[in-house]
Image 1: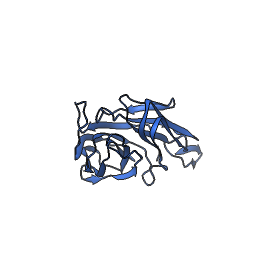
Image 2: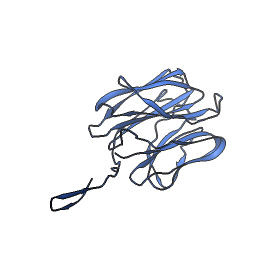
Image 3: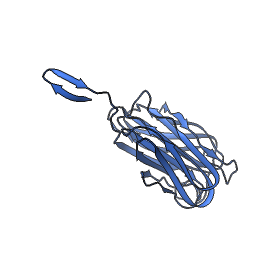
Image 4: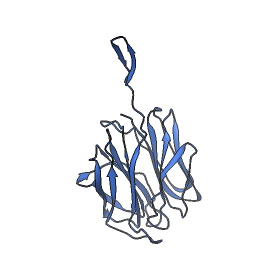
Length: 231
């Protein structure tokens, strides 16, 4: 970034650019349009990646009931698993949230496909793409939390003001969880069943930023928070 010009002398400072753009987002659930859990071996939806520089595609998948995701693709490109917080083990108690990503995805439209080797009772997914993200190290260290009998979860992330914090939640609740005052809701995909609300939030980076989610009745939940690093 050019910070000063004196005569023919140019002064540069190495900084990370602010991440400001959510170019496009898409959501899908295995049983859209119903109020009942329905297992599915694949879950697909369309996503359009923008044409800006230093792109990244992030896919979040929330599962209710034990499920095993064998892979996520965007078109023909395979995504990498970043984080997988899990709570509980039973059909009615298990909650997990997997975060997958693809650095420098091709611009344009393609299909996001989530494949399950073991189907979950309820499934929900979301996709987001951002610009101005550091391509060689796009994330800080993920922080996760899980519970089998609480009404709140939080994850504390330390980063710099030029980055943003992404928060993801999968809660066994019939209502959407509330989130902390520093967070902004990006999206709430449709339920993958009666008890699998899925949320994504963002917050400005800082010395210590908490991503928190609170719900009304003590039950199972899993969350993840991670810093997205500017280019």
